Image: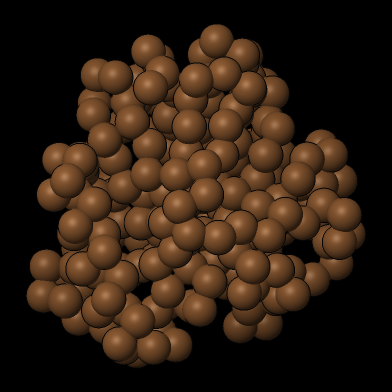
Length: 215
C-alpha cells in the first residue's frame, strides 16, 4: 500500500461530469479517469502539478465520459486526448468495441479486480459494476490521509439512487444494477470506504475541486 497518493477532481462540462486525476507522488505518473469536455485543461492541470499522464481509465463508454456525438452536440474526449499524448486506454472488455476512432493498439481490455499500477506503490483496483452499461467499472483507491475510496462512475447516478436503490431509466439492466449496488456496498463495508458518485452535484459541493486535491 502506498504511503502517498494524489487525487484531483475536476468538474468538466455542463452535465456535472467529474474527471479524476490519480497520481503516484513517487513516480510522478498519473492516470486520468473519463477524460471528456475540456481535454486541454485536463492535460495542463496534470502538467502544472508535475505529473505525466500515462494511462486513461474509462468507467464506461457513454459520450459524456469519453467524448463523441450526443444530442446533436460533439464532446471532445479520448480521441482529442490521444492527439496530445500517446497513452493506453483501459476499458472493460465488453466495451472496447464501442470506443470509436481510437487505434486498436491504444486499447487495453480490462476485467474485474484488475489492478492498475502507476510505476510505484500506488494501485487502482477496477471493480466490474455493470448495470448502467454492460462493462461499467468503478475504481477503488486508498489515500493515506483520507482512507479507502470508491469512485463509482455512473453505477449510481445520484446519491438518491444509491440511498434508495433506484435504477436510472437509461441503465441497461436493473438486475445488474442492483447486484452492483450490493457489490459496492460490500466493498465499502470491508474497507470502510467512502463513495463518490460522479454526477451528484450536492455531494460534490462538499468536496475539494481543482486546484485542491486529496492525499
